[in-house]
Image 1 (cartoon, helix red, strand yellow):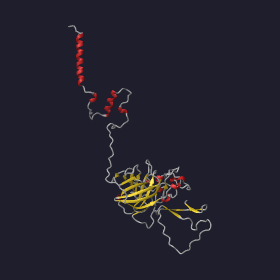
Image 2 (cartoon, one colour; image 1 turned 180 degrees about the horizontal axis):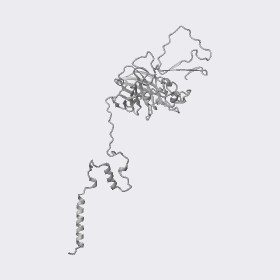
Image 3 (tube, one colour; image 1 turned 30 degrees about the horizontal axis):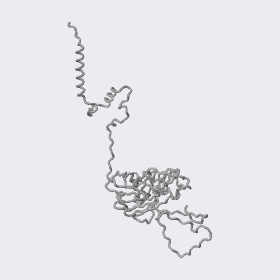
Image 4 (cartoon, helix red, strand yellow; image 1 turned 90 degrees about the horizontal axis):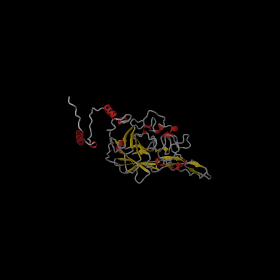
Length: 394
């Protein structure tokens, strides 16, 4: 048996040098970690397998990415942008004002935190105040509404006591009654924009598909009434609908206290005649609750009249509406919600003029009614004041 010869020191050193050279060559051929191409893992790599692989590489007690409560597809999910709405046409300017209606202003009573002319029983609302404190909101106080036309458009111009603030969550609307039965058929509403340009942002169009707006007795209070859904079909929402150009809103140029709506006449079937009324609101805004006096009792709604047992305003606040008037025809008879018709002009008689009272007494026929606005809208009964010997506004 031959003895085992151990390598000499020189042989060991030479072997170490060879090993170092081979290692350097292999290192030069390895890819740089930062430049590694993306690896497409096979579909057979299951979530369980991935968790096991991570668990093997992670120190005990250290959370791995699989511990994060994100959805499984969070790494690959991408946000899908909403399709941009393309508008083909937009309103211009009304060529003709067809008709208009005026409304009571609450500005004169603002300091007293009250209003006159509100009548929930007949759906006539004068409530441009906050709930509870009764803070006056002049940008909701309608004083006049005009309706006009131009080309294919119907224009609505709402005149307000003050310019709406830029950040106001206020909506302005027109309610349309096509068959003159007191039930609104369309509600076209727009949130007031910050700029003067026409926009569809914040514009909605609602339709009553089952003719139940107003309950059993249109315009008359029936609250609490269940089983009705008011305006139940939204056919346009900020440009989304069958026609992206159907309805628009803007601040009236050069008239900061006016808000304009415009909608295509075809939207309402190009109806040549209808009843209409203006709206403003910044609180409730529930089309499905129309009419509001079928949803809120007087106790729930509150009242803006100080002498009322239900003063101040409660759940129905920050809104105003007008009585209704006609489009395309002159009324010869009354309709539910219609503004008062003009009183007939009295004919001259040969009766002698009444004697002038010699003392401070109330006129024989009482104080007159005063017409509010420039057209047939509201009449307010004046009250005799014996201290001043004059008829005064209530």
